[in-house]
Structures are given as structure tokens and as C-alpha cells.
Amino acid sequence: MTPALVEVRGLRKEYRRGTEVVPVLDGLDLDIASGDYLALMGPSGSGKSTLLNLLGGLDQPTAGSIRVAGVAIEGLSSNELASWRARHVGFIFQMYNLLPVLTARQNVELPLLLTRASQAERQRRAEAALSLVGLADRANHKPGELSGGQEQRVGIARAIVTDPDLLLCDEPTGDLDRKSGDQILDLFDALNREAGKTIIMVTHDPRAAARARRILYLDKGALVREER
Ligand SMILES: Nc1ncnc2c1ncn2[C@@H]1O[C@H](COP(=O)(O)OP(=O)(O)O)[C@@H](O)[C@H]1O
Ligand SMILES: [Mg+2]
Image (tube, rainbow, N blue to C red):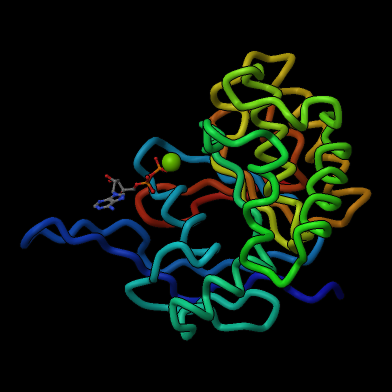
């Protein structure tokens, strides 16, 4: 059997606004095998982004455990978490989150600043990642000189430049037209099937979700239904 890359047990998350407690995730259990491609759907406000951020160590759970590749990430200090994240996780966001003053290549190099890669190595790897997403000829363009679909492909290059096991994608096609969105989904297919990346993609789009190997629905703090 394929070992679980991600093991979530009894995961709870609540936010506090002043004295008010906002419960979001109410004791989730979830196993994600290495090489899986999971779509996560659910109503707005159901906690999809919260779950993704917890899986990537961007936020701390209220209770429960998250193991990724055998590491209990809720037990790491913030420094350990930052270096763990740099090695194991790539994030892809709906609005790309590129830095507008940097070129595509400089944006893609950013995660490598948290590693020991030399400047020459950073440049070589950023160029390789940009080639992989079909943007070798746009390396010196700034985000404002690119289309939305191209910006998202730079976002994907930035996410894969450190060769992480896990790609966490939060509505990656949510701001794109169908054609650009399909190109992004084609890239995810290749990253999953050829490069063996494990992908968790939050999406509202049933067409995008249908590309995944399985679909999970989050509602009222619980995972309610699974389609295979
Ligand atoms: N930093 C925060 N502080 C307080 N409440 C938050 C915070 N982030 C998210 N929430 C609340 O948690 C719930 C889930 O949010 P989110 O995970 O963004 O949902 P989704 O991504 O499914 O739309 C919402 O009610 C939202 O308002
Ligand atoms: Mg969200």
C-alpha cells in the first residue's frame, strides 16, 4: 500500500474575534496518499482555506495532529516550520501573489532564498521551473507584463522550484478564463502523473474538481462526502 503522505487526526480549528469564538474545523480525520490528487470543495466560509493553510503549516491548529511525511508539524517551532515548508510544500494562490517589482525569474527564485542554493543554482533552477511551465521566454518580464494565466504559471513555477512533495492550491483557476484555467489544470495533471507530486486543490469549479483523482466536500466543519 502507498504510505500516507498526509495524516490528519482530530483536527480542530477555531478563530477568536475578541471574546467571540468562531469554530471552523470540528475534528477532521483525513489520509492523503503520496501521489494523490485531491479536490476539496464546499460552500464559501466552510473552512477550505483554513484546512489548506493548516496542512501547509501556515497556521496552527486549535487541537489535533497533522503529520506530513512522518513529521508532526504542529510540534515544530516557527523557524523549524519555515524550513520544513521550504522543503516540502508549494503553495499556489487564486490571485498568484507575485511581487510586482520582481521579474518572473526573481519571483520564482524567492523560495530558494530559504535554502542553501547559491545564486547561480537559484537562477538555474528558476529557469528550469519556468521552462517546465512553458515560460522560458518570459523570465525577464514583470507580473504586470503577463496575462493572468501566465502569472499563474509563474506561481506554479515558484511553487515547484524547491521540488516539494506536496502542492497546495487555493482556487488556482478561480480568476482565469476557461482556456487559461485548462492550461493550469493540464500542468497539474502532468505534475501529478509524471512528476509524482501530491496535489490538494481547493476549487468551486466542478470541471476543475473532475480532473482530480478524488473529491472531498467540507461543510459545517466536517468532511461530508467523498467521490471516487
Ligand atoms: N484569521 C481569521 N480570523 C477570524 N476568522 C477567520 C479567519 N480566517 C477565516 N475565518 C473565518 O473562518 C471561516 C472559514 O474561512 P475560510 O477557511 O477562509 O473558508 P473558505 O476558504 O472555505 O471560504 C469563515 O467563517 C471565516 O470568516
Ligand atoms: Mg477560501
